[in-house]
Image (cartoon, rainbow, N blue to C red; front, side, top):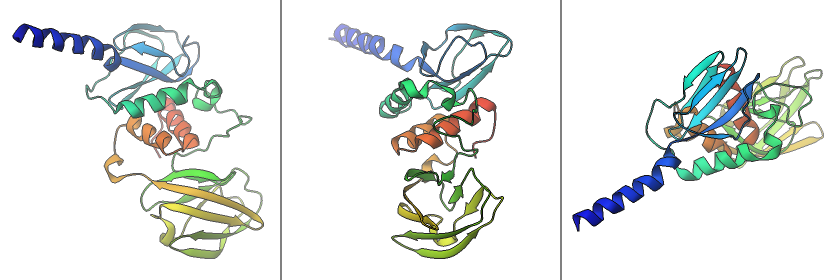
Length: 240
C-alpha cells in the first residue's frame, strides 16, 4: 500500500512539475530572439545581446526584467503558484496574433490600433467598454487636448454635470461621489457619449505581484490597461 501511494505521488509530481516550472515572455525589445507569448521552462539558460530586453512572468505573479548583455539561468524568486485560470487567461491574451506586436510594450508607436495610455489606472475615453480602477480613484484620460470639454457623468449611485476639462490637460479626476463606484457609468462630452463598465481592484490585490494584477485586469476585460501594465514593467516604471 505504501509503495502504491509513493508511486502515485511521484506520478502526480511528474505531471505537475512541468506546468509549475513554466514561465512566459510578456514583452521583448531589441534583438531578443523571443516574442510575447513564448513559453520557456524555468531555469533555462539564455543569452541576450547588448540592447536586448525581456520581461518574464512566473506563476507566482512575479515579473522579471532581464537586460542584455546577459548569460545565465532565468528563475523566479517566489515558489507559490497563481491560479491556473488566471495563468490560462494570460497565455491566451499573449498568444493572440494581434497582441504579438508593439502593443505589449516593446515599443510605443503612435500609429498602433490600440494607442497606449501612459498609466495603468486611467480610464480612456476614446471608446466605450470595460475599464478598471483602483478604490477611491477614477481618472479619465484623452490623447487630444486641443479643446476644453464640458463633461457630465451618470452612474447608478450619482450624477454630476457641467464639469470642465480644460484644454491642454490629458486627465480629469472624477468627483469623490464616483471614485469608488463599480458598475455602469455614462460619460458625456458634448454630443459624444461613452458607456463604461467600471471594475474596482479588490483590496486583496492592492500591492500584489504585478502578474496577479495583470490576471485580474484581463479577467475583468481591461485589455488596454493590461497592456499598459506590461509596458510599464518592461520599461522599469512604477505601476501607476
